Image (cartoon, rainbow, N blue to C red; front, side, top):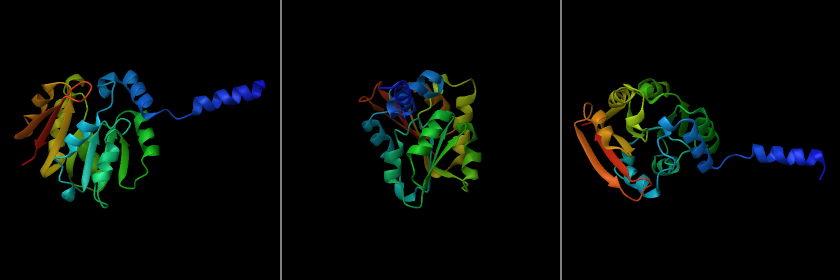
Length: 203
C-alpha cells in the first residue's frame, strides 16, 4: 500500500463516527459533574420511569441531559404524532450527535441549561411542558443550580404533569420537596449502579 493510501485509510478511521457508548464515555470524561455516570441507563430503568407518563395527553415532553439519547427512542415511540420532544444538554458534542442521529420532526435538541427551561419551551411555541425527565446529577451540580432547576421545572410543568428524576443519590429529594407536594419514589436495582427513581407531581 502506498503512503498516500495508508494516510487516507488512517483519515477514514479517524473520521468514523463514534458509537453511542464511546460518545457517552467521552462525555463522562470531559464533563463528569454533568454526566454523572459512566454507564447509560438500563432498559428496565427506562421502562419504569416512562410507564407513569400519560402519553395520550402529552403534547410537550422535555428531557434534561439526554446524553447520547438513551431514552430518546423509547420516548418517541410512545409520543403522539403531533407531540414535541425537546432535549436540553449543555454538552455540544452530545447535542450534535442527537441532531444527526434522531431525524424525527417531533424531536429538537437544544444546547443550553435546564435552568432556562421556561424560555426554551417558550421559544418552541409552548407555554408549558406536560412532563420533564432528568438524569442530571443534582448532588454534584454547582451551588444553587439544583434548586434553580427544580424551581424552573415546577414553573414550566402544567397541572397534572410531573418531573421524572432518576439519580444514584437520594439527595435529589431535598431539591424536589420545596417545589412539589406529591413525590413518588421507587428503586431500580437492575441498573449499574442501582438508581433512585422519583416522580414529582404538580397537582
